[in-house]
Image (cartoon, rainbow, N blue to C red; front, side, top):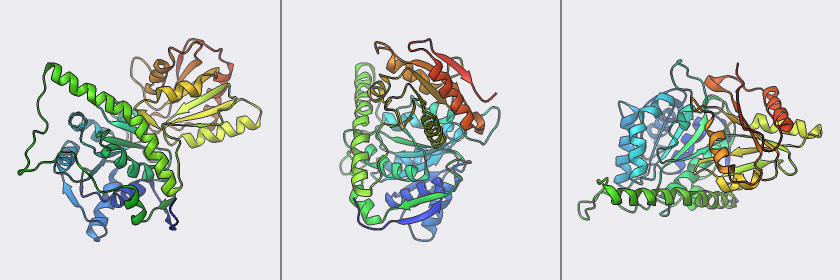
Length: 392
């Protein structure tokens, strides 16, 4: 653990992310403005303008071009960064697949926001969830501190030669992006000891030519994809390893792929991702004080999906209430859907209650979370799964 005294400032998660990119010694930034992400790259631009960051800021005409430029920077062997939200992430969709398929270890911060139509600038997690199958590691954060720390960890994870996959750090729009909290900003020397310079496997080099972004057909394509899947599965172990090392250096630990809270002896638990975890934690504390056996599981890694961790954490509970801030239209919430698949082969799986809430920035109150947990406590183990919208 570092013995140096870190700086402590009241800042938003967006500013914390910008500070992390500077501390990571990012050399190329390419981004296009979109609410509520814009203040990240505005802060980075100010760092560069004031000489506080040695990086090139590439002004592009779209989010598609931003990610393309960052992929090019990675091909050239330098550390790159971009961020976006909502329609911007959707506009990147084609390049998300290119980056992951090419095994370029980029880091992208998505400030989660609802997608149109109806038009909204407010937060939910639909934009990130819609990109879950593009091959990126996806980690959801709860606080500004966690957002900063996970950007630093994301470069270690992505650049690990066992992985070489891009990482998307997701934080909730406005709840995190525009709300100030006390954040510890580590010193540069400590970050340098944790995050060494980028060591690319292959780069564009006229003196040592390689084929990059090549074509592949039939069995060669399939073999490439099989290797990508193996790396994505291995990423679960590396996320835990990097998190443990980060804790030794900086003294902060976030639990790995999931973070259980007061689950010992719980009959029912609530599961969710992102900033609303803080509200759920308070509800669990109140209900525990009243003698109700409830707990909480914060799901941090959505891809790779933490199947074994969740199976172990939920093996003894009677029911799970899953709060999704998204919906796979025509079926249900993505977290609940994946969780049902993960628990399918348990001999006596818990009842699964899927609640869709917080869409388009709608509030999810403590009373609504208590309602979810009360319904879970009343459910019978093994009961059929259900889905309910709570915003209406």
